Length: 209
Image 1: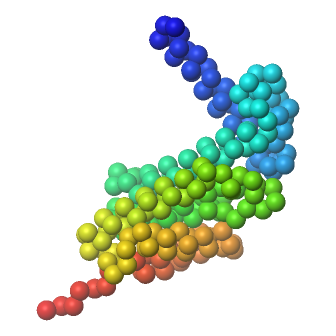
Image 2 (image 1 turned 180 degrees about the horizontal axis):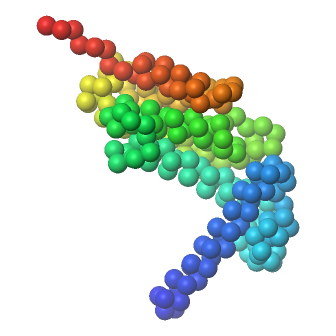
Image 3 (image 1 turned 180 degrees about the vertical axis):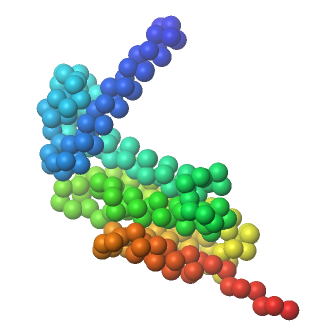
């Protein structure tokens, strides 16, 4: 099969998949997970049901694919905030602990405003999604990402080094899970939580000679 033809087919398949998962996201946001149906997704995406079934055999397959995409987007958002080239952080958030704060802010904000996904507690509607391997893989990726960043902070003597970076990363994730229960106004409360986390991670001041 000619390469151009193959690329055209692959592009069409990706476009269909994107349209379908966008429709799942819309339905999940407006009607909840139980409101996602094969007929509803087909109607909203403009794709025939016969075509939809070629891509996804049932509603569970639709939800799993959407959930995996959601988590990948979540991780990408956090990773972007941790990178030195990030431009969206607040002033002073370009040092290693400042970028960590930006990454944790992105994580906490997503926990509050995203549909059920990474880091959330399952309820009866989405419990089946949380037992899937993609969730565990994503949680491991996030922990490893934070651990690498914290190891860098320890090397720079910005973060405490009496606790392994992997344990500090676990502490961050556990502490940020509290973002789900913050009341309103949530943003000031999230910033106070970040103050506590960053202060707990900061290396103690070196005694003056």
